[in-house]
Length: 526
Image 1 (tube, rainbow, N blue to C red):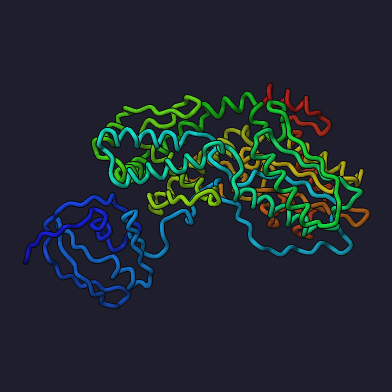
Image 2: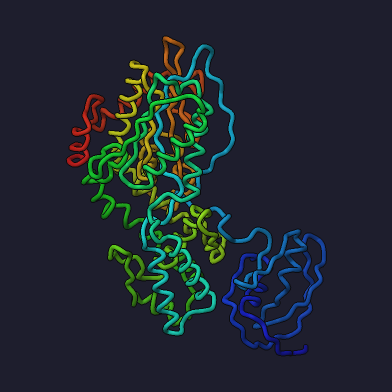
């Protein structure tokens, strides 16, 4: 057997490590190694593949291009990142973004209303559209950590590339933290336009439109983009639009979590917290964190990080990076937000993860959202019960519109922390089942479906002049109420009202309660 010396990049070596793994990335550093020529017969789908192979440390390596092309996949080499791609690139077109998934609108056809019924009112609750990072934390702390490693000579070439990419992201985010992105504006404008197109006859000069938002800038921005789309779709139809926003600390409907005392105690120290932490720090999580981070740091630096030598803080002074788990999670947060800001820059943080790693980190995010905001544990209904005042307001405002006939629609713009508990309280299938084992959450609850960016729940009311029906849309698709009907997806309004009024009574929320009553209820009971 002939032995020869070759110069090969670590990246190239990693590429050849396993013919079954196609999304492998290396740091791009080079060193000399001794390898043995090793003839190997490689057969892909019954076809022998030609290509030079060699033996190194007891492992036979074969060319990635030969294997990829034999599988009918496109093979690309990116010299800037020292990466080989077989098939779809591992970049920001991938999924696994949980509740940060951009709005997933799909063209759909609607079931025709029963004979004689026409739309009379729309009650809409929506999340803001795709946004920038909420604040300077994930980007800031990662950049600072990479900077420390570089100064200490313990950063890889890929780590330097990551630092540069985060630096570019921070330039984009400056003065834009927490705001709606270009993509988000397009999402909400599109939703508004489709509402106008689908229900044009509803928007007449004798009916007003009410549009409400929370105090956070991204929700009034979403409200205004929605209104712009609605107006454009209506053309010459002139409607009276009343736009407003709740004051901070005085919003029991769209931001009840700001007021709910017991709920905030639960978020900080509820029974779910230890379950979540145990899940995140299990061997899978620590293994993936190490795999991801050793692309950027030397082993010595990783050990320093693992020993919690660093405590890096966000702009508000809260520690957001102190160990490998938090570091890898912060990078995942940059990945999932990058798809929200495509109009501002093309960031490919997905290339630093394998599909399995992304799937894992999405599960971590889903579990956190599920227990903190959703159906949570079987021992508590607190996360969903705080949304009861909003459900009360939905029922009351719907009844008023039916009686007074002076409002085409009420459109409210809020947050994931609103949509997730609302979906649970409304008993929407797939959004309302409590689960005690974190590992079972992702099999039963999907944040990207329940509350992606721009998520919305719409109640569309129909009347034949005597009786009233209602159907529910989630993200503009017809879904079921948790009661019986002979005319799906249309339900008798009185049946829907009775079902939710019964739930409200059980948690102590009356239909005749005022805004002040609801604020006090949240502060004292929830």
